[in-house]
Structures are given as C-alpha cells and as structure tokens.
Amino acid sequence: MSLKSTIIRTGLRAIDWSRADIWLAPVARGDGVILMFHHVRPATFGAFAPNRLLEITPEFFETVLQMVQSAGFEFIGLDALPERLAKGGSRPFAVLTFDDGYRDNAEHALPILRRHGAPATFYITTGFADGHGRLWWLELEEAIRRLDRVIFTHAGRDFDLPARDDAEKQIAFETTYWRLRGGDEGTLLAVIADLAGQAGIESRLLTKGLCMNWDELAAFAANPLITIGAHTVSHPMLAKHDDTTAQFEIVESRERIAARLGVPVNHFAYPVGDPGSAGPRDFALAREAGFTTAVTTRPGHVFSGHAAHPHVLPRVSVNGLHQSRNTIRSLLSGVPFMLWNKGRRLNLD
Ligand SMILES: [Zn+2]
Image 1 (cartoon, helix red, strand yellow):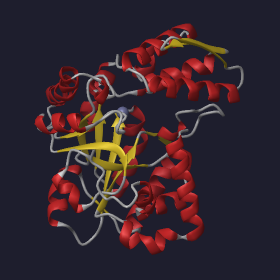
Image 2: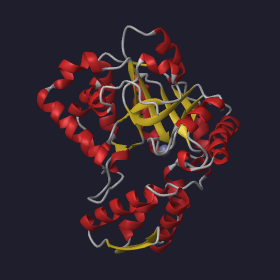
Image 3: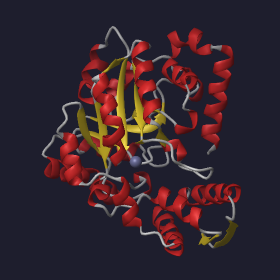
C-alpha cells in the first residue's frame, strides 16, 4: 500500500530466507511488544479492498495468540505495563490493543481473548460511538467502489481518475488517499465527503454499521479482560491541528468515555499515529491530560528505555496483508524493527 509497507514486506521476506529472526532475536527482541489490531472478522472482501491491511480473520487472530504464547511471551494488561518496564520480568510481555471500537471486536475477538485469558485494551473514538464520526478511509473506499470516475480538485489541481475495474479503482484509491493524507485534514474530509455524496454514501450509516455504540460499549467494558482507552473525539491527525483543538480532542475523549462508561480511562492512542499525525506537542498533551500511557503506530518493540517515555510507545501492527505464521514469527523476533529503526531502540522525535 505504501513505500513503508513495501519495505517491511521486503524485510520480512529477507528474514524468512535467512532465518535472521533466529540469530538476531537475542539482540533485536525488546522487553515486550504491544500488538495493534483493527477489525477481526471473516474475510468477505473482493479484489478491490484497499483497507484490507486493517483486518484479520478470527482464525488468524487465534493463531497469533497461540504463537505469542508458544514464543514465551506473557500477556499483560496495559495497566501493568509501567511497573513491568520499571522492574523488568523473566519473560517478554505482550500487550494486545485494538483501535477505533469496531463491533466485530466484541463479536469475533472477545470470545478468542476469553479462551486464552488474554487481557486487551480497546481505544474508543467517542464520535464513532456517538454514530457521527467519520471513517473517512472507508468512505473513500466505498465511494471508489461505486464510482466509475473519481473527480476532485486538490491544492488547485484537477483530478479525473478512471475507476472502471478493480485495477483502476486500486490506483484511484492510492492516488487520492496519499494525495489527501499529505495535506490538511479539513480538505481531506471535504473532498471525501464530496466523493461519498456523488456515490450516494451516507457516512453516518457506515459508522453506525461498523462501530459499537455506547450501550454496546458498556456491556463490552464490563468484561474484566477489557480495558477501555481513549482515541480522541473525531479521530484527527492531531499534529496537523492547533494546540486548542489537539488538547480538546485528547481531554474531551477521556472525560466523555469516563462519564458514559463509568470506567477509569488511563490509556490513549494517537489516531493514525505516524510521525506526521502525532508529534512531541501531542505526546506532551497526552501526558498533561493525565494518561498513564499513550501509543503511536511507530513500528517497534518496547524496551526498558521506554519507561521514561510512556507517551511515545511503539506498536507492532498485525497487518491483514500478511496473515502468515512466518510474518508473526518475524514480528515477534523484533528483527524487522531493528532494521526499520536502524538499530535505534527508541524513536521519540
Ligand atoms: Zn484509529
């Protein structure tokens, strides 16, 4: 999907050939790993599925949990992470995290978590639970699925992209997605709203169809394995917004979740979470808002050095494009991230 995923995929293949995961793991593996998931649901997509990286099947989720355990990792909840980092442990730890609050998490992931007795943290975007937040990356996919041409103007340039078959739709999605993601978020939302309108897509129906509402979340959060974290109000790329907006998004999501669900909300996930979406200003805001930890999508294992930087925690994405045992073995080894981070254990700026 991106240059980054191409590099990681190439790295994974290279590791597979050389089995570097075996001989480099003692150096590369961290004290633990925070795994990131989005959708867990049976595969139903066709050839055009540009967001497929964000979903894995329940069967593969079960495989991941089994592999994590047999590789010697201990499942811990996020509440236990700071102390674990400070004191260390005899075994590496694994923390399971899910972003956005999708209904399939309750339907398909929770039964598997229960079978393994594995705790997990679910980061909730309050606007999605309200039913009006915008899953813009899915709106864009759905719009391009329905349209034959993708016509928009961005930064003074007119685009007219053919989208008659799956191959053309894929190119149209990639072009539109990366063009918009590189710019300001208001324009991104406006262009996608226009395309969704042309395609007859009701954005709220998409959100309500996929995300848990507050009643569902209340039932879900009652399970002792589950920790609820915050993931802002409207899912913005925080670093692109002014201080007031970023602070509101972080603080308000915490207060709203606490008020609606009556649970402590001590953990935060930066939406999108790459360096262009969450930077040092946002890490400081998450700390000032009182969160104990905050996770990015910067790839990497967690090392003891992160104890001093609990608001810039890296994660390992379990990517729907690579649902294989070899991939999971490589991810758990830490080797792809040692290469990706050029040997740096902490990636903080
Ligand atoms: Zn998210």
